Image 1 (cartoon, one colour):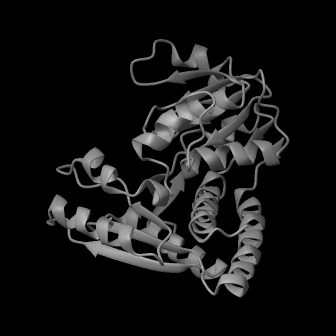
Image 2 (image 1 turned 120 degrees about the vertical axis):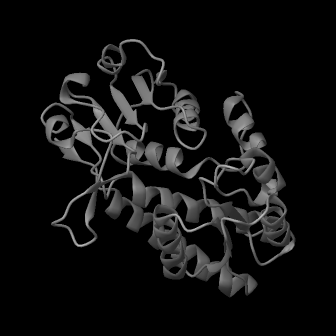
Length: 292
């Protein structure tokens, strides 16, 4: 039984990025720059942004944060993005999702310069991911992190049956497209799927990204399956210092008895998501500076 350690894998990736950044600085005098636009004060979003700031400092990136109140207008968000689009010292821009309900997410993401869309959510990036023979400029970070964990754990993807639970634009859909690129036979399970347990029980590789705590029980798993748990669900826990702890979409205690490999929550897919964001931003900077 392998517990896939996302923390140590992400550490290795970050240290190789730091080496590239110092090489870039020596040769061009510039470093990659990442900008985040944050609307409102959602606790989880603030926590994610803090992680991104720490990661940027660690590898030597420039970091810029634009914080807007929840009461701001779409125009103000678009203006913040346009300013970053024009700023040559910023190579990657992301809008911290989800945005407050009254915003038109599509309209806002469309403002983002394609060359700086390090989250990979621009319709052209997702479209190119879906079309055979086309290459997106950027692949969304969590799906990219999932595939990296499989590859780095020597999990065979080609020809295997993979099931993705959840079809969000952020994780489920791009993970489906990416697994397909790696020649897996892929199914998606969503809220309207009949017999979800039967479908997941056929999976050699299961990616759970539904946002429902402990949704996947041991009985849902094929013996020997590889399980990537993308869920990050806070549940009340008076004994922990914050009053809550994080659990995944997979019932870990049951799954470890059946799976051949599994990612823990926290410490699995999460750290890889941030590492892939840094990698995408480094690629964007290299492209912009013609640095190889």
